[in-house]
Image 1 (tube, rainbow, N blue to C red):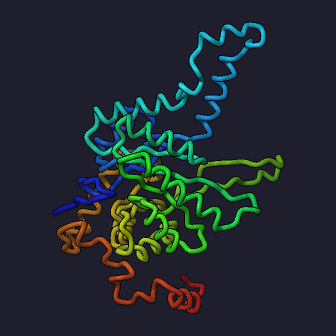
Image 2 (image 1 turned 120 degrees about the vertical axis):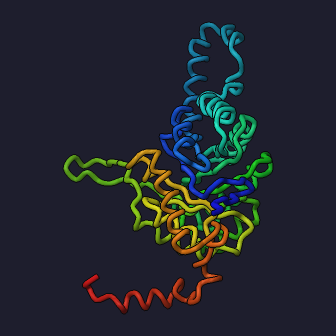
Length: 332
């Protein structure tokens, strides 16, 4: 049975990838993920804001007392020469590239074209096989139009692709006015892969203390449906690879994502709930299902239930919406 898959030019032994999480914060954790069976690892995200904050703190420290002892500044390098919080991340990439045998995908969560470009180049130089751009920008400024927001994503892809040679994936959200059109624009801008979907974490209200509170809610299997829909719609229509994420708990979700058209299936929540060894459970479950359904390879099953290949594609559009609403009887 052939489980191999190709994801933005990288050949993987199977389609199950460990997505960004605290499990990849050190070399021991990354080795554990590899030993557990991850086909590739997306490292934890490097946040541009964190780097900016650390760089500002460093500059303030270096310039303290400059009014009294201006000559002391000559003993320090230009603050721009420091990578500050980036150093530890880049060193981890370098060590992982030397010690692991699976592809290492760096993850960059940035907010400005300069930040994306500078740090993407450093990640490439450190040895990353690819980069995943994790765009987390909430347009809370009501003066920004949808078109302006979408252009930021496109410009980000073009800027990063102009300075790196390694593949670049973009993790997108489902909150565009036209997801399909946006996917095509990002594809044309040069994205080597699209990961569906970024899962935004919103704050909650503590009504007793009248305070905002934040907590990390791990994804559940029912959240698979939105990315499943768009993977099925986009499969076969883009040059970019397709990555699936969100809601993967068992091999059932892995199978569904592959049938929709995903090239790889990523998971974090199931590994945090269980342990990295759960990767083996997911892989074995996939193999068992393929054997039962007599599939000889992942490539054979990929996209078998996509919009282009399913017998009744109308079930992926408004007709299914009407049928679902009309058919609800309150007993299911």
